[in-house]
Image 1 (cartoon, rainbow, N blue to C red):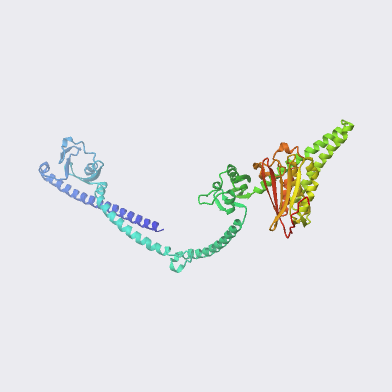
Image 2 (cartoon, one colour):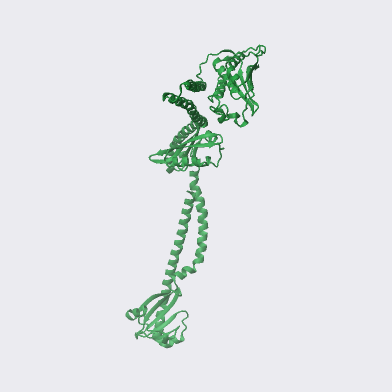
Amino acid sequence: MTKKIFASIMAVSCIAVTVAMIFLTILNYRATTDSTAGDLAESCGMIASAVEMNGGRYLDETDFGELRVTWITRGGRVIFDSQKDPDSLDDHSGREEVAEAIESGEGRSERYSDTLMTTTLNHAHKLRDGSVIRVSNAQRSFPAQLLKSFQPLLAILAAVTLFSFISASLISRHIVKPINNIDLDHPKTERSYKELAPLLRKLRKQNGKVNRQMIELRQSREQFDIITESMSEGLIIADQKANILASNASAYRLLGVEPSEEQHTAFSLCHNEEFRRCIQNAMGGMRSECLLSTEGGERRVIASPADNCGSVTGFVAFVLDVTEQQQLETMRREFTSNVSHELKTPLTTIYGIADMLANGMVKAEDVSRFGGDIRGESERLINLINDIVSLSQLDENTAPRQDEEVDMYELAEEVIARLDMNAKEKNITASLEGDHVKVIGSRTVLSEIIYNLCDNAIKYNVSGGSYSVRVSHIPTKALITVSDTGTGIPDEHIDRIFERFYRVDKSRSRKIKGTGLGLSIVKHGVSYHNGTVRVSSKSGKGTKFIIELPVEGASAKKQTEISE
């Protein structure tokens, strides 16, 4: 506003001074012209009277100075000229002032010269004999006179401009000062111009409304921040150009990036091509999902467009941690595939033998052998189903639980006795040592744990080898150690032996009866009792499993050898 007032005052001042100076120049030029024309008429009359009295001799003897005197006959021929040779001049009867003088006695005219920038004033007087005396005088034209006065005019204009500059600056500041001093937060009409009173009253009302809206907006923002920051899911809100409008800490954490001021757009959060395509689809108005693999795990990004009256104004993206979900999905697929394979093998064998028996392709003496094969495969199938059911119950924590005090030494003794026949078939020696340590838990589940470890110690042992079970305790924990002299487990397989259906040597394992779920049952059964299981093994030198279970008031008895 100050600049506009200042510029307006300066412009008006300069234009007014310039117009006034031009107008004065015009008036001066007209006054000078009229004065010169009067003098010229007087001079012309005097010269004409002298010529009437003395004839041409007067013209020859007189010096007329700057005046140009020309004597022209009635026919238009020049017989005298004070500045030029008469014979070199053309017919003057057509000149305006001459023709007017011949007709009315006197005549005058003005002629402007572009080349000389002069105006020639002419005055003609008719003599008694019909000839004409013309007196001429040249003076500066208006443009020439204006150019001559240009420097003075410029100096005056500069002085006026300086004065206008100072005046305009002071006046504009004085005018704007009351406006600049208005307190916009608390406008008061009595301290400003009366013309601004309606505006200030409206401004005061608007301030109250804006303050209320700001308080509500701040509260909404704080609530939004509290909600979004407490979310475990990542949230990204962006406009139609992918500029981030809001985001929470979980989004940066899940995408594995550190927040920085350079991250203005959603694309800067992740450079993965799938993530970029997902965001671009949302910006194009299409809901999109993608799965990202980061150092922290698997992330699912769901981006939905924000639609307003048919136009996309931005998008909202959620980042979810689906690492566990993906792992469970992978385990489910593997489990389904393995179960299908394990079930198919005995069923195929049973179907094949049954088909041969039904078609009479089996000799009478071989019927009992084939029947034994059917029974063996059926037993394998039943064991697999029982193991799957047990494992499912342990996974879902739905296994029948009748907690009781269980003597782990006696339980191990029972298991070894149950597997005695299997051990003798492979010439395996079993031993039991340790203390009578009692724990509180499910006898059935604890029995399956020891059974599966001992069964594996026999299956994967060498002929003539041995395995041992030791029951001991440390404060608040019972230790059950199962060691064997078998083939051992290579180091690269140690971390995976508790996976369902995982086999170290698949070609050899297929020849050994089993479901491939034994160690998984061991792991889940130990976890079911809040315990831990460790394994140490060397290829070709045997394997040792160590189980730790909470004792919960167990009593230890003197170490008893199995021979006792």
